Image (tube, rainbow, N blue to C red):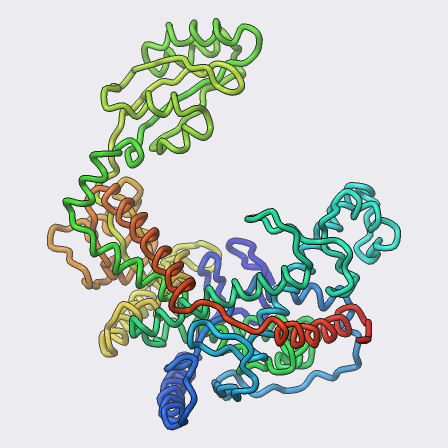
Length: 594
C-alpha cells in the first residue's frame, strides 16, 4: 500500500507511515512491546551472570552484544541478489507460521578457542562472526558490479532493455574492456583475472584480498565503537532495543513478501549457516550501540570545551562560521566582462540589480539568491576571492563587485552583510498531529483525544526513569514527527528557522535548562518537548560539534591502531575464506567447489 499523505510505499499491515508520521490504525501493541522490553532486560541480566561464571574465557562484550556493518541498505541489496539468481521463489517452499517476534530469544554464545581466527586487541573474533562480514562485503560488491553492468547495457539498448534478460553473454566482454578493474559477478571470487585497485594506495590486490580488507575494516569499525561504548558504561536502553526490534520486523516482512519461508533460512543463505535470527539480532545490537556511542561521545566532547576556547576559535576564523545574504549573476560569452561591469554600475539597490540584468542580458535572465549562505558554498561554486570579499566584516548592505569566475564574470551584490545565526538550541520532541490521514484538521472529541494521548505518553515517561534515552524511545515508537527515527532529535536549530511561535517561545525562555520537559501546543500539533541544550550563537554549536567530531574520530583511530589492533594468521584466514568462497559460488553462481 502507499501512504495517502506522502505516497511512500509501505507494507500492507503498516500502522504508521515512517516518512510523514501519518497513523493508519491504532497501535494496540504497547503492552506487548513493554512486556518484550522487560523480558529482554531480564534475559540480558541472566546472560551476563552466566558469562561471568565461565572460566578462562573472555566475553567479547561484557553486556548484551551488539553490531552489524550492514544495515537495511545492504540487506535490501542482498535481497535483490537472491531474487536475481533465482534463490527466492526457485524452491517449492510452503509458507509456515513463525513464532511471534516477542517469543524469539536473544542469545549469544562465545565461540570455542579453536574457532577464534582473528583478534582486535584482546577481543576474539570467531570464524562464524567473520563469515558474516565477509559475505556481507561480497554481497555489496556483487550488487554494485551488477548495477554498473545494468547501466552499461541500458545505455547500449535504451528503451529496448528487458529486465528479464541479464545480457551477460552478449555484453559482458565489452563492459569489461571499458571497465578493466571491474568485478565479474558471474565468476567465483578466486577465479577472477582482473585485479581491484585500492582507492587510497593505488595498489592492485586480488578480489579475495579486497573483500577481506573491506570485511575487516567494516567489522573493526563497529567492534571498536562497541568496546568504547562499554568503556563509557553505556547501557542497552529501550531506544536501542526498539530500533533492533523494528529493523528485524521490517526485514521479516520483506522476506515474507519475497515468498521466502522464514527469516532464519534467508539469513543462513545470505550470511552463512551460523547466522540465524538470534545471531543477526546480536549484530544489529552492536551496530546500534556503536551509533549510540557516537552520539554520546560527541555530546560529551562538545561540553568539554570552554566558552573562551570556542570564542577564540571563532574570532580567529569568523568567516568560516558567519553567513551572508548574497545575490549573484554570472555573465557569460565574449562580452561577459563588459556586461558584468554595466550591471554592477547600475546595481544601487536590489531592484536596480534585477532591472540591470534584464536590460543588459534579457528579461528571461535572473539573479541567483543565496540567503543565509556559508562561505564554503560560495568558495566552491564561484571562487574563494568572491567568498573572501563577501564575508569581510567591512562589507555593508548594497556593496557590489565583479569577479572573474570559471564560466565568465560574476557580479556579487550584498543584501545582508556577515552575521551569525542567533538563539541556537538542541531538543527532542514527540509529535502528535492535529490532522487526520488526509491532512484535515481534527475538531472536538477527536482533537481532545490527541491531546489526551500526548498527556498519557508524558505521564508514562515521567513514571518511568524519565531519562533522555527513554524519551528517545517514546519518540521512535509514538511520534508522528519527521525526526521520529532519530529519537525526535532536532540538533543545532536556530530561532530564524523556527516556524511555530509557541515552540520558539518555550525553547528560548530565559528559564529554560537542560532536561526540561513540557507539552507545547502549536498550530499543527501537540508536542512533548525535551530541552537538550542551548548554545547562544550558532557558531558556538558549530565549532563545538566540529571539534568534538574531530576528537572522536582521533580517539577511534587511536583505539583501532593501538588498543584494538588487528592480528590474524594469514594462512588460517585463507583456509576459512576459501570455505566461504566455495559456499558463495555454489549458492550465488550454482558452481560446485573444486
